[in-house]
Image (cartoon, rainbow, N blue to C red):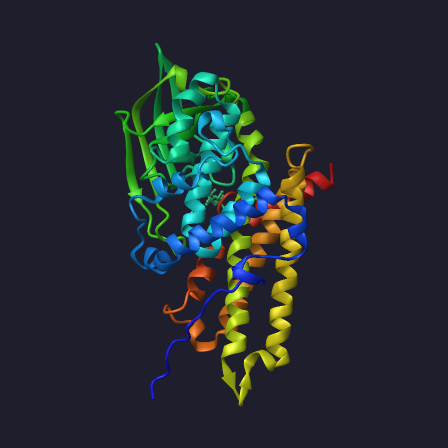
Length: 400
Ligand SMILES: Cc1cc2nc3c(=O)[nH]c(=O)nc-3n(C[C@H](O)[C@H](O)[C@H](O)COP(=O)(O)OP(=O)(O)OC[C@H]3O[C@@H](n4cnc5c(N)ncnc54)[C@H](O)[C@@H]3O)c2cc1C
């Protein structure tokens, strides 16, 4: 008789699939309500299509409007601009819940809500905030952030895209690559060089509207994971951006970049945490269900050890991440933010691989989501700064 694929239901560690561990006590009632609401919404709305998004490499066209209706697109932006007015820890909780259901949605959400929207709020003038934030918070507009270039990845201040002042505009020429949401974005926070003689102090940040003449999407990437979340190469060919769209101060774009970096790392680290949590949750269910040698595989101590190690790694990552998020606004968390994303990302890849192992042959089949979790987890060791760069940041801070 052919073997049927197991019916898996991610259970979470407590009732209704919601996390109830010790760090639960760090959260306020508002945090818990937000977390539970987002998880329930994501399970209902996106759970049934998460594998299809991965297989077809496409999002539903109304994804951002649906996230906008939920009220999370401007999670850290005050209500007067259409946001939720919540704190960084709330942002982490949202990304974590989305990632439990779909890493692709979590990544595109983070690029929009943090890399673009939060940056625009923190660094924008009142006029810029009024002009862009309401549309970005409702989902009418999609946002992205573009730093990376073909020759400037880890060395972000090595960018070559040029912006030359001309009358009321800057004329931009260059290429940006690996940009999340790049092919669907309406508004991009984009970095360009405004002074060739200065390396660090010669960069300016611009708000680029993608319907401007001279802006085009030159390539859409086919990726190993995070399929559905669009990643694009963008070309700027004599693209005239109004001077009024400079974000922050001319030649001081590195300040904008640096102000955002710690918050970005913490916000995005919610994603590997969510992936790992889902991987463990599925594994616990499977270990109870699957029988070999006349007993559930969860009775075998080698499986139990794996589950225990996965749980311990997740809890350690969560404690570091939530604590860092909770104090990020009050003190410098340069080292802690890098440590939180470094540890959480590497932990998630290992936990997803262990989950695949626990599922045996079916873990390797695309009928189950284990392969997707492994593929999605791996990106978090590369995108938003690699593990190597995160280690360099931590070591530099320690040796100061
Ligand atoms: C799916 C995806 C989405 C992305 N989204 C965005 C986005 O929205 N916006 C954006 O601007 N960018 C985005 N990126 C780009 C991402 O930030 C870069 O890929 C990342 O910073 C690494 O740059 P790189 O790919 O050029 O690798 P490189 O910098 O060329 O690194 C290659 C290898 O060398 C190592 N290395 C480099 N320098 C050092 C060093 N000093 N010491 C030790 N090792 C080193 C790296 O760690 C890595 O292992 C995305 C990337 C991916 C894959």
